[in-house]
Image (cartoon, rainbow, N blue to C red; front, top):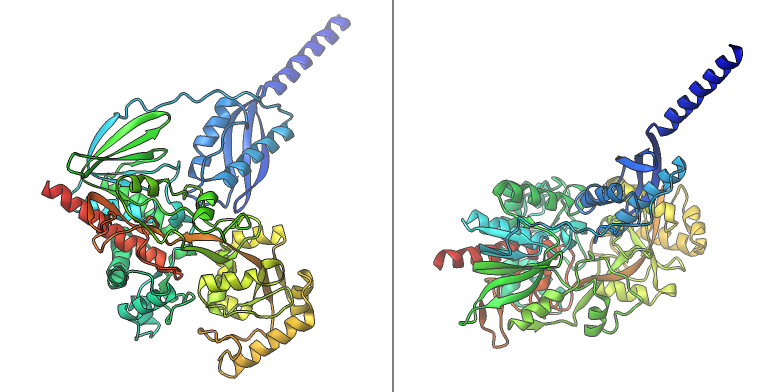
Length: 587
């Protein structure tokens, strides 16, 4: 009886252990995304992933949206991290997959190395679809065109080759130059005008921009900004504007968060509310003309299947430039070679320019390619935290000396940096400047990531900042002492003529970040007129074809001034959408 009892107890214990081992197990895992740590809680049952919950992330909510939906579903379905990441969200995808791997390792689970081919296709989507207006490219210009055309009664579709919307408009700082804005008025900046902004723009592009195009942009800047505020619902900072390099006045409106997320999120919500279909993973391949030479349709491809989008009124090209296509950049400007990374979204590769050229469009100014001077040496992206430069931060080289006006044109600053030891520089500011720009607080994820990577440092003393990057302290102190003295004497820069005036840097805390130039904006593209109509080689409009934004090449000349891109894409996006809608009504 005693032996039987022992045997029965042993069997119960074994059953209990079996039950425990079979119960679901949840472990946490961490990976590094584009903007910091991604922390997940992953539930496993019998060695298979059952659920993934996001505990913490700092990723761009629009750009990384499909990482936490589509990629998550693929990982669970395959019980594997060998699945493809989301195109355009590479760093976020990598961080997510590494976090799952970390959780699996902690749980003692071996994930599968095999991945099923995704055969899913949208069988419900017809191969041929009819619209009044077809917009190609779901960035700022594309959304502006689609919303404007829809508001004029047109039946509109917006197609985007990437899995997510936004493009460069999403990841940029999204500041928008607007003369005589409500914020300028509040700040008592009363002497700005469209004509003054036009003069700055033309001068900044060495007078190679089209004066008529520039005039339309600057004249329509204020009503377009008011439209973004009142119709689209974009929130701009109420008591601050930037003065970008090359501008004679502080005139750039700043969206909440200092990135395009505020704008693209509001546009996406409005498009959904208005019933505008936004089809991602749909790559335009060809513009179709009728026998009279009018563009009447777009041929596109998605998942290996061909689609045709008929356009009664017209097609709007809003596909951006080619800054993420290194070979194309080097083809048109050999000086911008393999040394340069890019600030651009991965989809900014320029194929649509050749598609439009094949349809008869004229390409102009293709060799005018801009680098942004203050970028991350590791990834190439713009260091938005270093926008403190617009409020008094200074640029110094490895020797601790200033070498250029901080508010000069982007091309001038970039070229100056490339001539410095190591072809890089540092941006230095203190808490006095930080209280004005507030970039450390606004871009806190950048602050943490750049600090973790070792390209940014915070110090209570100037010597600490100098020592961290091995800058000669005596030189840096002499530079800061001179800047601070000029600031105390009225702010006039006797050395480099900083047009914004100098600020006192004599006391800490100090912030310093390493920076390099990256390929940023392609000023060349399709030639358009003031109606956003694409022109052929004879200067005549191609019926049914409109273009707006960086895909065009007539606005900025040799160099685009900061803050002008958003003005350009919004003004001409609306004009293009309005024109295509009017054509649909007339037909």
